[in-house]
Length: 419
Length: 81
Image (cartoon, rainbow over all chains, first blue to last red):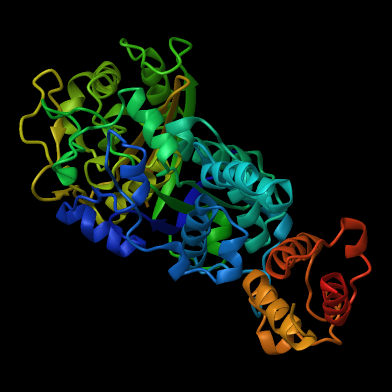
C-alpha cells in the first residue's frame, strides 16, 4: 500500500522575505526582489550585469557567529530555512527536552545547484595570496555540495540518510522527488527536504552573463524578471533557500501535526537533447508532468494551478508552455499559472524548493500568488497567468504542480493536493 | 613581542571568534579538548590564526602537545623568544 505523504512545515529565506509569512505576503502583493548590487567587485570586474536578488535578511542576523564561520553562505541559508520548517512543523531537535523522534527514521534531502562556490573561490584567493598554511581546514566540508545536507542532518539529528540532489535549477524539486522515494520505500517517516543557493559571486555572475542567460536590464532591476512578457531578456540571479517537512500522514496524525497539503507525487526525467538548451518540443518536460500526475494518482481535471519554472529567458519560457499544452490540452485554460521568479528572481538550486513552498501556501490559503512585469504577454504563450491580484482557487479538492527544469536537461515536477 | 598575558588575551579572542566561547572562559589551565570542547578542525583553525596573529610557526606535529591553553601560550612566547 502506498503511504500517503503530507507537508507539515515550511521555511524560506529569499530576496522578498526572510521567513515564509513575509515571502507569502510579498508574493501576493507583487514585490520585486532584485536590486542594484552594492559590492565593490561589480565595478572592479566590470560585470555586464550589475543587479541581483540578495536575501532580504542576512543569515548572520539569524545564526550564531561560530556557526557562520563553519558554513558556506549556501549552507547558512539552507540552515535558516531548515530550522524554520522544522520549528513550524513542531518537531524537536536532539537537545530539546522531551525529544521523542526515532532519529534513524528521520532523513534530509537538501539540494543545491552549485554548492559552496564562495568558499571554493575565496580559498583559491587565499592560497594564491597567502599560501597553503592559510587555507582553512573547514574548506572542504564548506565547499562540498552536500555540505548543507550534512550540516542540517547534524542539526536535526537525522540519521536516516542525508541526500543531495544536484541537477542545476531542477535541484529543489528533485529533492522532493528523493524525499518521496525515501518515504514511499518505508525507510523513514520524516524528511526535511529543500534546496539552497548562494552564488551571487562575480564568477557565476560573469559566467551566466557570458552564456547570455541573464537579463541586462541594469537600469531597472525590479522590472528585469518578466516571464512570459514579450520583452523578457534573461533571468535575474537570486539567492536563498526553501525547506519543507514531508512526513507520512500516519506519523503526522499520530503527533497531532497541522497538515498544510499532501505531497501527492513527483517525477524526474532528462531530455538527452542539449546541455543547456531546452528541448524545443519539450518532450522531457511533458513526460515529467505526466509521470508526476501518474505518481499522484491525479486526473488532468484535478489540476487548477501551476507554479511555473518560467525564468524569463527568451528561449526557456516557451518549451514549458508547449509541455503544459501537450499534457493538459484544452484543460490548460482552466489552470492558473504563477511565475513567481518575476518577484524572487531565479534561485537556481533553491528555486524549486522556494516555489514548492509557495505552491503549498497557495493550496493551503486557496489563493495563487501574482506574476509581475507582464506588461505585454507574449502571444505565443496563451496562458492564464495570475497578474494584478491573487487568484482565488476555490474550496474544492484540487492539485497544484511545481515545475523546475535545469541545465543538463533535467526536468522535475512535484504534485501537491489540498488536504 | 608580547608578554604571556597579552598572548593569552589574543588567544582568547581567536578562540572566541572560532567557537563563540566567552573570552573569560579561555584560561591557562583549561584543556582545549576536555574543558573547551574544541575539535581537531577548530584547533587547526585556531593554530593557523595564532601563527598569523603572533607571527610564529607552530608545526603540525607540535599541535598535539598543546593540551592546555597555557601550553599554547608558553609555546608562542618561546617561539617569539
